[in-house]
Length: 135
Image (cartoon, rainbow, N blue to C red; front, side, top):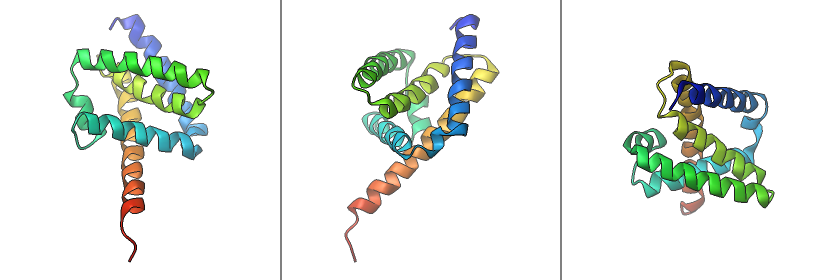
């Protein structure tokens, strides 16, 4: 990734983090969809959590995922499913930043990973409580 590309991505990550700080974290649907998307990816990769999945991905895997995320995100926007597209954007930025060597970019990605990991855990806990038999 070129320094110019890293700077552009850092700017986009900073904007998403600011949006999450201002109001995004209060958007229950978007956070639920983020956790669900992360869970699907973690399950497909046969890993325990988001960070473990990211660490196991090759550069080719990341590129393929980013292409799928771009296609799916654009489709979601076309269908006016903004919260789903927002969740995919967060995952895509986290994945894209993993190939950088800019310390600020890696720190931004780590903050996104924290959010993804939290929503993944919350999603898993929700699913578990919904599938446990009643006493």
